Image (cartoon, rainbow, N blue to C red):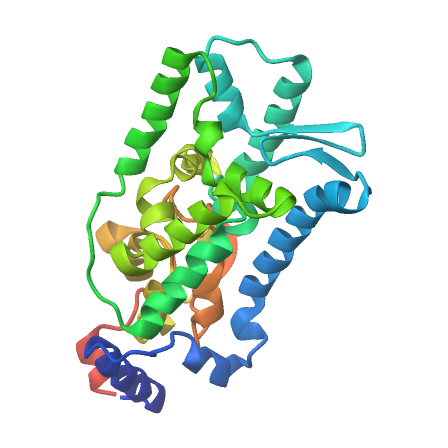
Length: 314
């Protein structure tokens, strides 16, 4: 067994014993340096801050680059952008949107069809840093288990938002949507948005790991639909290097999407094809042996990982 594999095995044993403070990505920092081991995380945070600032500099400083919010906006007085989920709710409520709303929704939908629908969840959604922080704290505290709800529940919530819209004649979900409430809270100060943010944080830490984004959020369910055809994918291009350290699984918000591509289950290729992958890039960051990279859905097959018995014989 190689020195790297031995170190990974020792760390896995400690993590398996429930040692609080076990930190995925430590090996990656040693092997690649701190910046490379956090490059995609830093890129996501920069995009999230930039998106929020574009909306906030208007009401805060009177510099109106973007007017509106993440549901519907107008950039530089020319470019309309509309959340296609909001448009769909509006239609379900029995209202016909204006032409600008259709154009804005089409632009957004095409964008997410290309880069992956759930890229919204990891790169744009302002709640993502909150849920990531909750997952980090849960790992640091060594918390295990918790409530269990199937991941399909979010699709039931998604359907329910359309039923309520049809019954009420309004896009009722947007009145309580945590993303909208959080954005309003940032603009206008303390209020329901901050309370909802705190509730989601505590829920993810103490009740259900990645519970909101991974199991309940109807927006995540909606954006997973166009992700089925997105060309941009995370690829386990060098899966033959995998040393089973499990760091990728520990940091992934949707860990079930990794294993088929990483282990070739059922003859699967190295491309993570699940529409639930958020393209967050954290598996790329924390992998010390650079198994993962961004690629396309047409990436060819790669050698399978070395069998555990063969690895132990090295």
